[in-house]
Image (tube, rainbow over all chains, first blue to last red; front, side, top):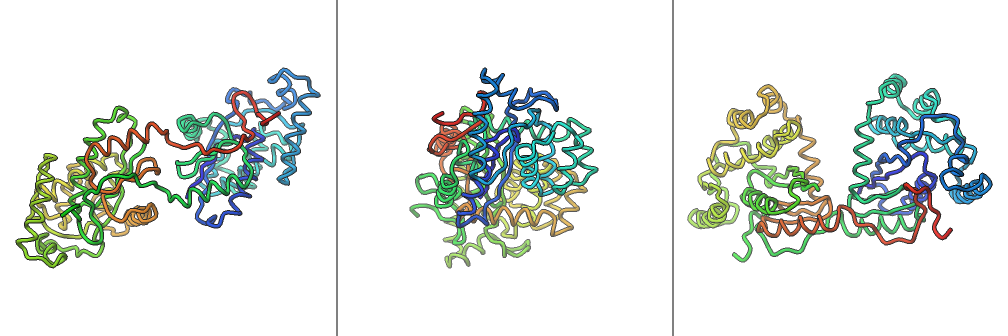
Length: 234
Length: 234
């Protein structure tokens, strides 16, 4: 079974939803047969590559609320994060995540995609690190297991893995995702949002019980198998 | 939309089913958005790499029938092939298809997989060529667009694309295929056997109408989208 998860490092409910999904997966009896793939989704592709925009300012502007109201909104998210044992700081920076997604594709090739995504989430939400700084990105990526020279190459070349990021985003739209996190099991079932762990567990159970593929009801037709090539009705 | 077709070059209903599927696809309004991938399935993995076993002898032995009865069975298949405009000779050779599947994986990398499969089917069923002869295989593969040196390399190395063939076969079993041809639309719908064209067209219509992914009914959950990060009920 394969679960694809579209998410953005700047998305709080992706951060929290990942923990909830993993709790649901841990409670799923056939978890060893589940492959998880992370897909790119930029919530704000036009976000500046800046390193000095506080998230609280961005939120106040975006929603047209006061800074105090933005802090209240953030406090509710922080409480949900705490429920999953996750740190959450509202003094973090708002910025562009394209380079992070490109590095996650490099991480996929090296088999450390999941660890790198966790590290990015932690750096952003729990540690409020400046992910718009290439030196910070590089340090995190290398600590997660990526070769320093390849990280430098990807960060220096804006085209590296750019097509892969765009392809993921196109696919999200084609699959009907309007927001993230968006979970897709075997290209068959979609689950939108940071659902409770039990919702994920049940979805995994359902997909497992159904089998990966639903055999369409058709009339008998000629098929060749171990017993030879049967001709129906003959 | 992606259709995967598990089949074997030695399987008459795969040969005929491919033509029926293509007729169904041609009648499907959104055919331009359909990608077709051919997957390996050996009906008789233990078949000898021989070049001198007539199919009619193999059938008579397999089913415990006389050669005349085997000829009658083959005549019925030949009639079905003729209905699709396909040649069909019963004086063809029975043999192992592992090398053919390995070459089809090479063909996939070069974007000529479908043409190569057609060429193998034609050589086997319409022309009764000796596919157990590497020189014959090579000639067909090169004519279908593969570089001669790569074909020679694959034929000389029995490990080349062997894992890919085995992986396809494992996957067929996991997806519930018990025989071929086996058609899978978007890893969601399975269709077994050489069904009439109209069955394929309807299955494509159904998959298209449903969208690629079925959104599971869940409670509202937090999701981040263009409008920001919504918290349900707040």
